[in-house]
Amino acid sequence: LQCCGFDRGRGGGGALDVGGFDARRFYGAIQWVPITKRPYWAVRATSIRFGAADVLPADVAAIDAYADGTDQSIVDSGTSGLVLPKRAFDAAVATLSAAAPDVPRAFWKGEACVDASKLDLSSLPELTVSLATEGDDVVLTMPACRYVNRVPKTSYCAAEAPPRKEDAYFFSVGPIEEGRNVILGQSLFESYYVAHDMGASPRVGFAPIRGCDADGCGVPAGSRFEVLGSRWAVVAALVCLPLGAYL
Image (cartoon, rainbow, N blue to C red; front, side):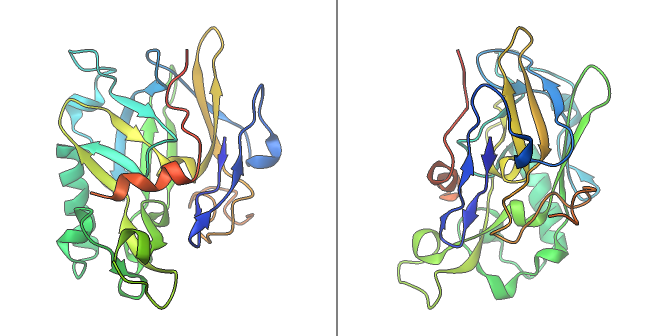
């Protein structure tokens, strides 16, 4: 799945490849992560970091699923941004607030937008998610422009039309109660081409996305391919088809 995200007030496009994958849509090799449990694309996150701060509690990082069977983490193209259990979300907000102290707290709570001229994304750290495999973790890195999105002010931030269609930032990380899934949504899908393998040993794969340059965010920062080339949960459904579950 190549999901090009939100391009200046319009769907950014992309492609859904069925029965295989198209190497023209990504850079390098696909890194594979085993699915921990059906029927969802469930994986285990061992770390979620904003810069150097690991916000995923150790007791959550150590499990594949909670006692009631709820998967620890799922990969879901139908979710906007990133969903974190409350402890992880609060830790993330503390880290980001310290990095951008002039941004109002309502922004980090998903209750308000900020004008694009009032937030320097270069002050915010990268988001890094580590996923467990049988060997070394697969480490996925996303720039701040993947979790702080530029959005149409008319739709998400204000009742009246602004002078420009897209002149506000919205924080696309949200909280969920403890004991529920970490949901890896559009922040991940707009950074990586995501391959879903439904074979005998189901797995999900990731490679830096290619061909999605219209929004100016580019491929994941730090990638060797970089030189080449609560209303927050609504955005993604307008962009890509959900692939949250399979039979």
